[in-house]
Length: 377
Image (cartoon, rainbow, N blue to C red; front, side):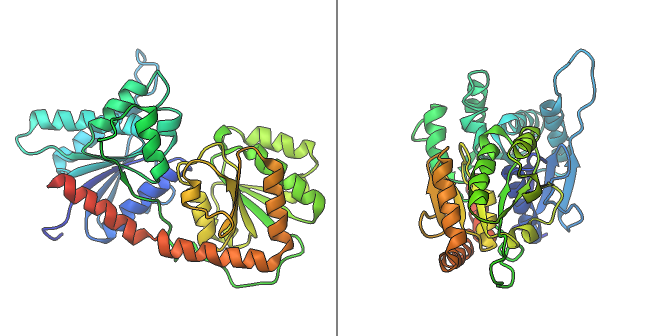
């Protein structure tokens, strides 16, 4: 490694969701630039290749201990960060999601500072959405979330909307700086397929972790209205607590023959390339990474006009944004795109262009590195 190389710890969830995807992509890019990257998670993140040079994965496995009946993952994570940093001193820990990751990293940093004469690792926290809007703003967690954020050496969010929500919902002072670094997409991997004529039954696609906030039942309602007017198919990518209810809804509406539930272990770019448009009628989105990956594959997006989505999807240009819960309006937009092939192709091209010019990987990682250098002085 060169003298400019850093030792960076990256902490993230392994579950199917945007925060783990972003963390894995950052770690991969940093390792490719020659930095020594140590990734901490409960399991191997789906987008992370642990065999890459300069990248080491450290599984965090809590021990069972009968008197402590609740999860020990936050404490095990603290200990793992300390263990690794003792062996290969980390310059910086970049955590994704406030609780428990920022809190665990803060404890690790405090312990390391107390036992070693040299500088302890700096702490950069990237907030991803529900750690502020749902978990962090819950009265049970708010004081700890707020403390962990303000104890960080730098804080980033993927959208200006989430930065403002952090100040508002957690009463973080307005003069506490938050860097907005938009999420990004690998536009080589996520790219359009060869142009084809529109299929007799075009496919709509939705990707999420099937939590209530994703409103997958609205996806089904939108599709039901589209399917009533014309042939169409729906592909649902992901898994989560809402899946059984969604399956029951599909069966009740008689739509099972036209819908595929693909789960998580699929080649996502291929699925997106085969679709005609992307649906994301979420209750809230801090950014909408799944929509961006669809855009990179040349898909117009029909989504809720909420949170950070207007910073990603340009209404009337790369898709349509409508109020949360307005299933009829979203279905109308979807039918319009499917019935007007020139319009769909124009929006598809605009989506791809926006992904390529505004949300590429390397400029985003450059911005994260600038944050690292700043906090390291």
